[in-house]
Length: 180
Image (cartoon, rainbow, N blue to C red):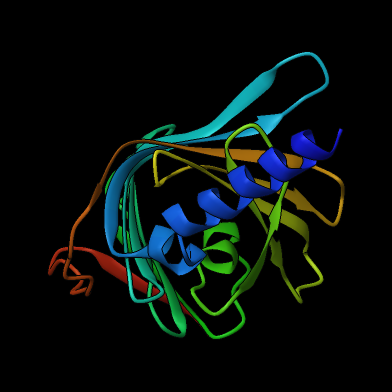
């Protein structure tokens, strides 16, 4: 029994040495992303696309179910709808799931799972829990439970850690709508 505990502790210690800080998982990256809502019998795809993240900012280019690009900047959420040629700008108090979980300022604690997992400590009334899973030192998935007990699974694939310039300039021929 004692050797089993020793080996378990050794494996746990070594796994933390591989990714010494969860912040490394949120280094600038680009990845394909699939967001699903977990239902009782199956999962429902909410959206799919390509995401880039750097310095608490992100660009999410949706290709399903619509043609939109979402920019999460410091105090703004910008939604560019390419089908309707509109740009919606939300200031300060917008409520968008990805903005809340892609925050390098969050504190994470390690939890037990088959891979490497961390649970976020989120002080937000709309999110109960957020769990991050890493495989081979790369962000693999996030599971979020909101305040209505809805479970969302965000899966990352083809993730590449790279620097990306994230800024926004509205196209000239798009209608701009501000929602302050």
